[in-house]
Length: 170
Image 1 (tube, helix red, strand yellow):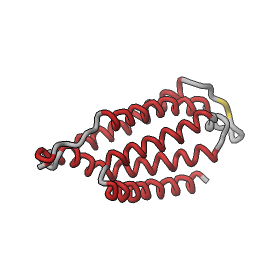
Image 2 (cartoon, helix red, strand yellow; image 1 turned 30 degrees about the vertical axis):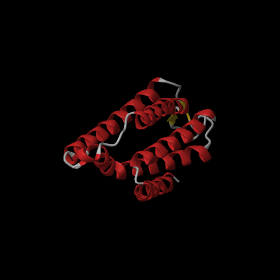
Image 3 (cartoon, one colour; image 1 turned 90 degrees about the vertical axis):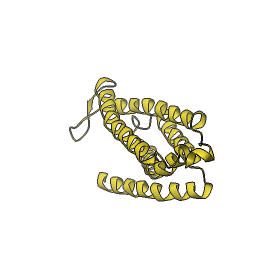
Image 4 (cartoon, one colour; image 1 turned 180 degrees about the vertical axis):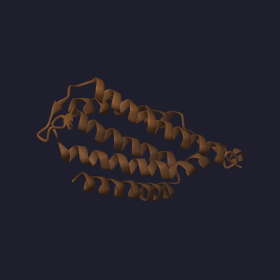
């Protein structure tokens, strides 16, 4: 079952890359697509938090959350080059894109470490029917940090990301 969910999640990631980038091309505004991705992520994470979806084992909420987040991840990744060129111009795109990908990689590494720390230090471990040690409350707590990060990203996208003037795009 985990393999099927993982495979479907990968399809959502690929669909997000194609769908969100095509949508951004039609709108001519990549930042709006990021706002949409953040809004969807906030909504689905919020629903899972409010319902205690992980603690209550509500797969009908947790699995769509994974799919939406993976579609947003793919869509965000595919729109980075065009967003950067829209906002910083073509002169510096290689350098800025490299910095962006480095930041993305650091976030991927530190995010996993942060989630592991939260699960290890919050909630309580129990044993499931198969004898595995699980900590649903710890994983639920990861969502609180995640939603705060989504909200911060959305606020940055709304208030700080502005296009460059036409002369500077060069």
